[in-house]
Amino acid sequence: MSNMKRIIWAFAILLVFFSCQSEKAGKEAVYLFSYFKGNGEDGLHLAYSTDGFHFNALNNDQSLLTPTVGSDKLMRDPCIIRDPGGKFHMVWTVSWNDKGIGYASSDDLIHWSEQKFIPVMEQEPNARNCWAPEIFYDAREALFIIFWSTTISGRYPKTEEMADKGWDHRLYYTTTTDFENFSVTKQLYNKAFNVIDGTMTENEGTYYLFMKDETRYPPQKNLRMATSQKATGPYSEASSSISGNYWAEGPTITHKGNQWIIYFDKYMEEKMGALSSTDLKTWTDISDKITFPEGTRHGSVFTLSRSEFLKLQDNLLVKKL
Picture 1 (tube, rainbow, N blue to C red):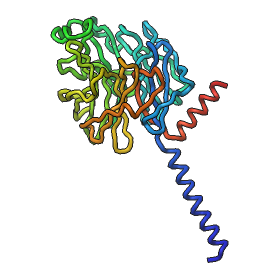
Picture 2: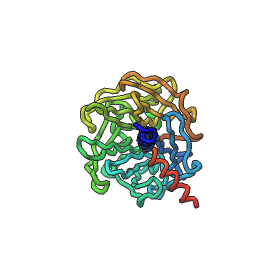
Picture 3: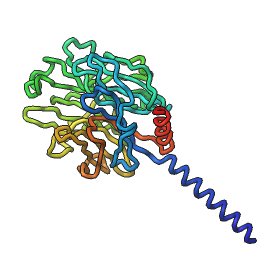
Picture 4: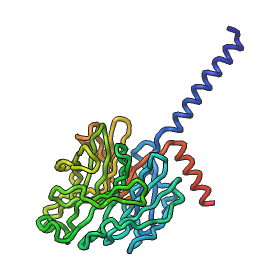
């Protein structure tokens, strides 16, 4: 082989190598975290991380969407997921006392549809609230499950006595395929304790429901887990606490390499915490390994490819101009 052919051959190999590296970098996951600050008055905030541990605020930690629906017009507990077609869907808590939740969709996380109020508990005259809604896409059934926590006054008198000011919650859900038509609201989880802040994932055919035990007297305020063979249940009895000796709420879960990571709100300490597991059974506290923007509160985690994230950054810069 002549020297010129060797040079051309080596150049071709390098070109393929760098092309593959570029494609790989474009597909590498960037973790996005949706959250609120304060009482949720200013709306949606986003942070990002390239390693799943250290999160930085996007948009100079300014709101990307101002809430417009609900009696209090808040945007607490924003949960964002992406459907199989690439569209983003978000639900959130609009008020401390409303019988419904907020909903909006987006193609780029910057421009959002008109916000809608979904009255998911209007059929219950004694319902006091709808808190911390989440969306889970059940690929097996090809539908979205929206679930949240609600107190129905007088429904569970025994546990209501152990609740703070009668806020005695259970988890409820509705399903949809188009966010226009919704199934009749049903109960998702009730194992005779006060429960809020559910989040869900699936692994090898088993569905995992993580939640906060909100019992006040005696105080629990920890994270627990239940399992089911169907996303809508029935779910098992809750595990013992998987969180530490602190009050925790607002869990959200992601998969990174061979480990699962749950981020959550250490709300009494005004900072975020995290748990890690390789088997979804045994959990290790890794709170000392994470950082979030100051003031981050209860949100959700999802991923973009590196190329998608760079496009989001560019679009935010263009928006500012």
